Image (cartoon, rainbow, N blue to C red; front, side, top):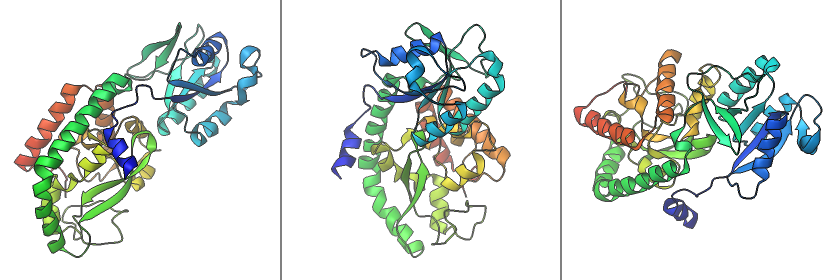
Amino acid sequence: MRSGLNQVLTLEPLTTVKDLVIVGDGPAAQEIFQYCQDQTVRGYRFRGLFSDAAVSGVLASQRLGDVEAAKVFAVQNRIDIIYCALPGTYKEVITDLMEFCERNTIRFRVIPSADSFIPVVQTTELEFHGSVPVSKLRNEPLDNRWSRMAKRAFDIVFSLCVIVFVFSWLFPILAIAVKLSSKGPVFFKQTRLGEGKKKFGCYKFRSMRMNKEADMKQATKNDPRVTKVGSFLRKSNLDEMPQFFNVLMGQMSVVGPRPHPLRLNDQFRDIIDKYMVRHFVRPGITGWAQVNGFRGETRTPELMEKRVDLDVWYLENWSFMLDLKIIAKTVTNMVGGKEERAY
């Protein structure tokens, strides 16, 4: 319980350490390595170098294997960033490495050089590590620690206000209604993926009769498992209210991509481009996709792809005002009873 309270009271550490590896070799790779070794630089921890060819110089002792070994190491050691210093002749290898990173929620950076190949993406940005320019695949406002702290502070204040002034009196009413609707607990807990693919228990008011398919099958229109009380809770978004406690614990945010059941992640991660990118930020109680009509059941890969596109747009274009806009639109939809596949 004490660790939980510590999570609530913590905004964001001023410096979050990010583990990184370098794939490839060359002067720029050596400068990135020296940058990470500089004691005045905080936030980056070098974990090793991978290259198909032998490496000389200061990085010789840091080589842990070839390019393919980098993928295995990155997954097993929860690497945050892969820096690519491969020459342009490795075009297919670089593209494959980028796609691997996207599927496994690993940030991909290219160290440009005269003969380097930078994958063509919609938004390519440069950042500097010392004097070394590094190409990013996308703009991520929440990669900035001050933005993250501001968002976290808002999450804590907003969640506390909802819990104290709304949930405190609404909870007994909804709890009694759920208990009278069918046998079973008041809350439904399901394991979902959070930021950085960390698993957590996501809470909701139970809206279905107890069934063995709860973790395997999405709710559909006229689903016999959904109770009358549950149908009202789903359409009004009230079933999500217990997730404000997830927000206080730092597992979720008020606004962000909705966390999907693990089964859906396994189903779509390899068939929808950028699906796992949505896990670069904390999941939310509401999100940009939800207020734009993609809430509830996703019957086809096409529907899920559109939801993912909106989620990725959100993390690339985040602002405090955008969060306020999404919250306002969510409340408007609740009051207006807008369904949008919320069965």
